[in-house]
Image (cartoon, rainbow over all chains, first blue to last red; front, side, top):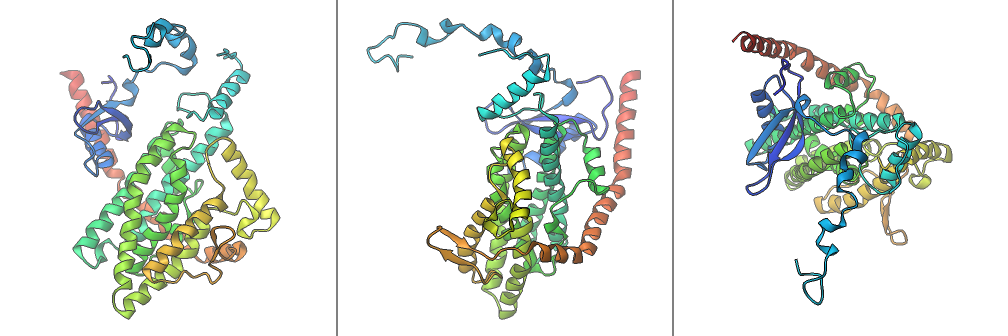
Length: 100
Length: 332
């Protein structure tokens, strides 16, 4: 959580686990002066029809994000590495498609 | 993949246009042209404002609902409108504007909301007609918006659309009961439909942007210019007139099933077009009629401002409490 004091209009990102077996997914944001208020607001806003088994709230200013302008260099590590995919190799069976 | 020169605006524009051309979504931290940002923000803000102002006509009937069941469902519907406003404010905030600024713009009249809601809800049947017709029109608008080019707006729309189907059905259900009730109740349903039909057809879809709706060339050209820009950016996906036609096509059979008459004598099935024809909207006459509702418009805004101001002490108390807790944490 951020060091700074929160106010009633401090934004929090909301993550919801829609049902067991799934991970939490980002759904949007709410305002709140503390985590409990953000959680209560998130419950009222994003789960009015019980489409959730768990909620996380994270202060928006606590999220560290990659910058879009760094897009190419940051993700370039994954580019041009066909040997990371099964298709790069000899097929296990005649058809070649369903051999895992 | 070619690397564009990220130092100049040229490269950014190319990247932005390439994303749109590939039908990819634009996300908050992407570079976007100012015009795009302004157009999305204007639309999302107006949409958000319409949701929360739209709570008022129906909200006024909460204490006078004819049964506990109707009260519970109307309450759930009005709560959804508040929720939709909040999804949309949350999406608007990703464009670098604060909630407080958006509300100030609504309260100060620099940002608009759908003028549809400047009509008064005179009887209980209006709650049914509003939900069936204006929410029905909203669904027709919003389904394509689930694929709008700005990611957060599209995601908000998907949540909204899931809930909007309930709104339309519950409104239709209210009218259904009235239409199967006493002659007075039937008359009340017909009267509400008479008053909410034109606001839905005209105002929920905006001005004509083709000559299909009977608009003269100049009016249509003006609307078309705005729609073209919005469609080129993938914000809008269809013309206003296309969506209006879709709405009329939805409503006619529903009205027949309900047993009400839509107040447009020109409505008839056109075999050749495969659509219902409907009367051209006299926009000049309609604007004059809107001016008659200026009293209601002032009330809507005044009510909104009063609610905001009456809540100021709560926001202040929350801030004071949070600051106190923070200081306790610092000294501990």
